[in-house]
Length: 212
Ligand SMILES: C[S@@+](CC[C@H](N)C(=O)[O-])C[C@H]1O[C@@H](n2cnc3c(N)ncnc32)[C@H](O)[C@@H]1O
Image (spheres, rainbow, N blue to C red):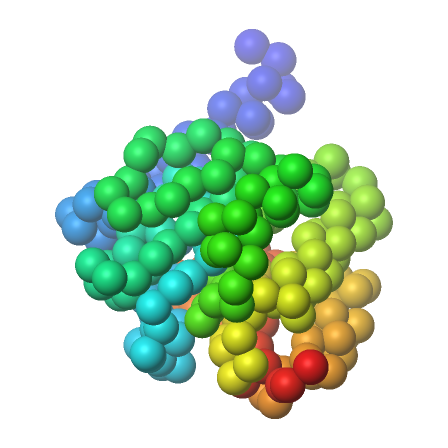
């Protein structure tokens, strides 16, 4: 085996070891969540009561579906959760799933039909772009997704509603916070314990959408 291959194997082994020993992975397995990401949303909800009085939710970038599992539980039987993702997911009871690219008009049209073109109570987005490895390109793609989420929220989040969006630290971060502050009374930055410290992801918690 050449040196490169050996190094790669070692990295993969270390990742598998870390993953299997991760408290949140174990918790997800025990509690039937599709991924450890569920704990990020649960933690933010515990602190910020994201789902308080929420009956309908749009979950952008929902695969494999752990945030949707949390959302479906929180809104209860009479609530609605609509999830969108590029990837297929295993069906989830009470989730209306739209398979498509959120950056495409056809997907947006399908989503708008699903919400009957009416404002929703909560928008959550855990979307992350496929990484190219080119820093500037990846940052621009990530920022574009956040802008699209804010644009959707502008049109289809109810006044006073909240929005939670994954954002990666980088060149566009301050601009995205500024943009959010134009639309929401309060914008907080959250880094739940379940989010690995090695990851540059954080969450913008945008509270109380202004009347627009
Ligand atoms: C970190 S995962 C989401 C995990 C999810 N919150 C959960 O708890 O299971 C990010 C997801 O964003 C999706 N995604 C990225 N870009 C997208 C786009 N343009 N349209 C729809 N989904 C997208 C990816 O396919 C991926 O499944």
